[in-house]
Amino acid sequence: MAKQPKSAITPTREEDYPEWYQQVIKAADLAEVSPVRGCMVIKPWGYALWENIQAALDRRFKETGHENAYFPLLIPKSFLEKEAEHVDGFAKECAVVTHHRLEPGPDGGLVPAGPLEEPLVIRPTSETIIGAMYAKWVQSWRDLPIKINQWANVVRWELRTRLFLRTTEFLWQEGHTAHATSEEAWEETRQMLDVYAEFAENWMALPVIKGEKTAGERFPGAESTLCIEAMMQDRKALQAGTSHFLGQNFAKAQEIKFQNQAGEEAFAWTTSWGVSTRLIGALIMAHSDDDGLVLPPKLAPKHVVILPIYRDDEEKSLVLAYCESLKQELESRQFSGASIRVLIDLRDMRGGEKSWYHIKRGVPLRVEVGPKDIAKNGVFVGRRDTGEKTPQDRTAFLNGVADTLESIQKNLYVRALAFRESHTHTITNLEAFKTFFTSKHEESPEIHGGFALCHFIDGEPAMDAVLKDLKVTPRCLPLNLQDEPGTCLFSGKPTNKRAIFAKAY
Image 1 (cartoon, one colour):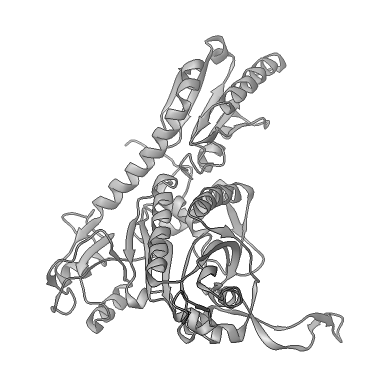
Image 2 (cartoon, rainbow, N blue to C red):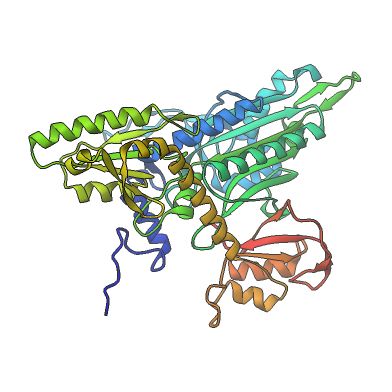
């Protein structure tokens, strides 16, 4: 009996997907649990990923007319209380500061000094504090629109945490805009959803469904929440970004009002939108394999790692000189509008160990260089996405490297899209829906779990009971679907609306 091939990551995805995810993070050295419960330390390779995500998104924000600013981490509790639905939605997740400093205690330790006059909440999101500032800045229709983004950290007191996907503190960006009309605010909401979707698909190689959240899944205090939803390799959904039309709810609570062109007093129309370090979790779960992290080249901290191979000092000087010149030539070439990012791994390690180190970190291309390669003016190239390893002529490799990186980028997207499509099913029968989310089909085990497209009625009590039992949620009403007459899967009543249902992170 042939031995099963070993993988670098144990357990495999098939054996234990949640533990596989944690082991990929560990093997790639992306992050680790911090001494503070529920928080994480993002290590250099993981933070470089976030920096690349930041740079690409920040450029898009500025191209669409937004500016960056910064607002306080601490928010007076009374600010959150002004918008009842908002505070109700976040109350259980808020971390609260009640004392203003520490002082020596009677036993030699430190104890809190006097309490604050008003408790301060560590921001779970910044609508209320930013709204208070907008109320000061807006007097006339000429002051609008205001289109500001901030890169920040937030705190939400999570009970069950998982690195990148759900932590007590995480990094994100949050855009907040104010407009003179409902039409302008809606245009902003849709535009930013499109920005997120384009980034996810073209940079993360992550196919997403653009949709609108149901009332029960909507952002607290919003009139409408638009989102992008992606499928992970365990067939669960991951919300990868949201854009909220807030109407005038927050403007009325924070008194963001202005004199319009008719000379009348009016409340502004506001929006907010954001993505977070959860995107790194999405990258891991959408693309990685049983040998570790797989990264789309556009976001990879390094595009190419060069691995010198030599046996003695004479070979070392020859090989390192060749590697250095190869690095310089690679860096003179462009991929996706920037210089190709290259690392020469000079560590004193066995060649096989070095190669596996970078495989597990997801570097798109590994280039081995030894005396035999130099004699042929060549290189030995390994692709992370396919595992293909080939000897190549140096000049041909250099001339084709940008195309190869583009090929990897597209391959990851096509692969992820094919996976999502093969696990998305239209379901019209309630028993089939229950089976889809509870047990594998004996005849077709591949038809089990994923995205179920179904007719439904938002807020239908019969639906809520079924979904709670199955631990399934309505992810979104896809924006690309036209209304289509049908029957609610849960109540049997007529309806035109369809939604994607899935288990989710």
